[in-house]
Image 1 (cartoon, rainbow, N blue to C red):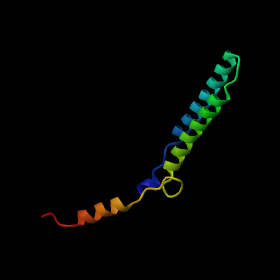
Image 2: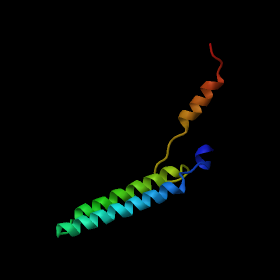
Image 3: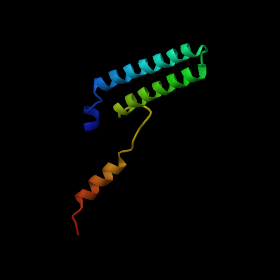
Image 4: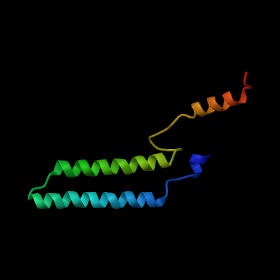
Length: 86
């Protein structure tokens, strides 16, 4: 229940978007200074930034998404706590 009620603050997402904009701007500026464009570097940077944002979004929503964690360990812990200690 706690995972469903607590979310990543919006400030974190805003910061991620600002950092991604600045990183891509720096890649573009670097390509401009170099006189030639490195498509591989630009695409790799864009892909990695998008991947980080998607993973944070996915982890923020535990009920759906690509990353799913089994609750069996917590259920086992709960059952073990119900047993009396020897």
